[in-house]
Image 1 (spheres, rainbow, N blue to C red):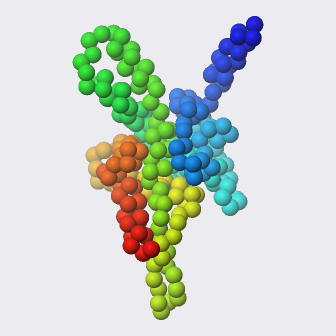
Image 2: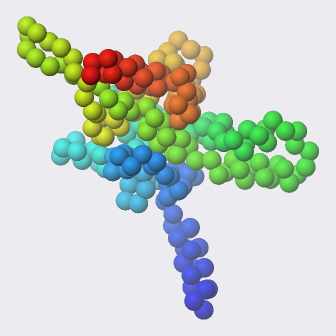
Image 3: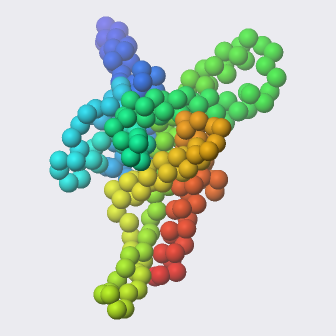
Length: 231
């Protein structure tokens, strides 16, 4: 009886699990950087079906740290002026980008795509592997990799100003990472045949890998290099 009850509870938990867009599980997402665990809100209370909570995160200082990370990405995509307030449009862009990431990422999937599939079981296995890929994890990895850990600030008055290297706070790392990712996607989509969703997907995938093809990774490396010279 105890085993049956436990199995029933597991089934109920699965049924009532909050999934982003009704598709992507948020409980399996892992934040590998211990310093950013409190500032990348993904699971538990921050799990949402849609990245549109209408929360008033600007009322109190540091409250935006509790805003779901996917919603923060949507908010940052609403730049510049002509795009202000068009949140439904940015939610749609992020949803399409996640679908593209879901199809492109995964070592197991890329292996099966390279092999000639002749058996129905291989097709089923490929489909199952595709289901296991979580774009939210790719976004979290991209944010972790894109936030600069060291920056430089201005020290002194108007006459003698010099730059001094400083450590970057965890919340600012997340803020700057999101801004760099969105800026890179926006600039890549300008005067390009590729859609903004495709450019955002490429930017997130490259940033999650730590590739220098990513705009955010290049800017992060540049900031850290300048800060190192100002120590």
